[in-house]
Image 1 (cartoon, rainbow, N blue to C red):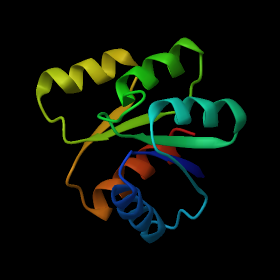
Image 2: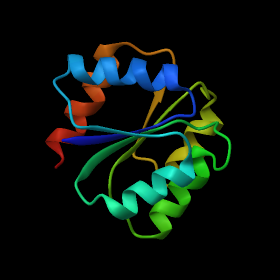
Image 3: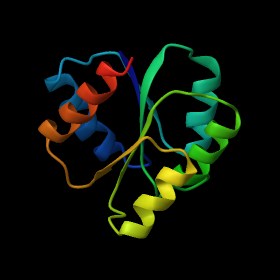
Image 4: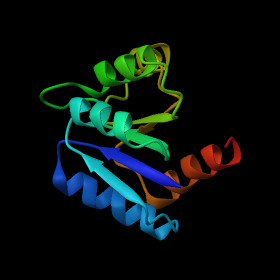
Amino acid sequence: MQVLIVDDSQIMRKIIIGALKKCGVNDIIEASNGAEAIETLGKQTDIGLVLMDWNMPTMTGIDAVKKIRAANVKTPVVMVTTEAEKEKVIEAIKSGANDYLIKPFSPKDIQSKLEKFLQST
């Protein structure tokens, strides 16, 4: 499965890449904001999962999710964020996110999300 990691922090992208590699995922693409994510999803048709940060410059993750869903892109999106309030989780799901992962997380947390979406594909 090809995974798109969207986070403005290069360090966080490296942490997520490390967790994905521990889960056996090596086909990874990176974007540093929501606009880049939308552009990448428009060019790459074989992305199986998007791990999207919420707070980013240029375009936030939540705005990107809304645009992705408005473009009828069905790729599963997991918000990976420090936004842990119940209202934020509800907002993300209503906007089209498929799931939510709160930072900090463990490689096992990433693995459980991967398994969930591997089973549904």
